[in-house]
Structures are given as structure tokens and as C-alpha cells.
Length: 90
Image 1 (tube, rainbow, N blue to C red):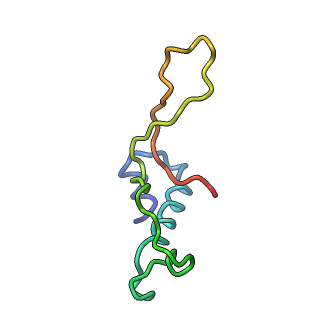
Image 2: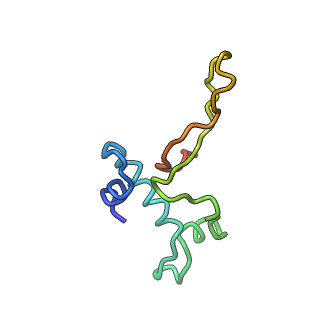
């Protein structure tokens, strides 16, 4: 999928295009290839099938923990709403 389509489909700002390209590349590494006899590039390199259980859709709604709350904000929500735009490095 093209990065511009990924961004426009999910109404994500254009300046995040590098993350869309990185996400598409990560998915490609985990997709079967005819040239590799139906194996994924990940499987060829590491010898095991990739774990796809934690793959999220680009642009989907996610909640992340807010650890930087002031002491006086104890009753405010810990989870903040965001959008999934890629994988953490490493």
C-alpha cells in the first residue's frame, strides 16, 4: 500500500509519511513471497514464522499511559488517546 493512501485513508497528517513507509516495509517483511517459496523474508532470516498477533492497523485508535501527571492530577485519566503510526525502534 502506498504511504499517501495510508495517510489519507486514516486522516493522518502528511508530515508522518516516513512512518507510513516504515510501517509498509515492516508488513512486507512479514508477508509471504512467491520468490521465497511462500515463506516470509523474516522466516528466511530468523528461521521462525513472524508473530503477527500484535500487528495493529496503521492509524487505528490506541490508548497509551500518561506517566507524567502532576501529583494534583490523581483523578485524571491515565490513558491518553492516540493513533497508531508505527513500531518502536528496536
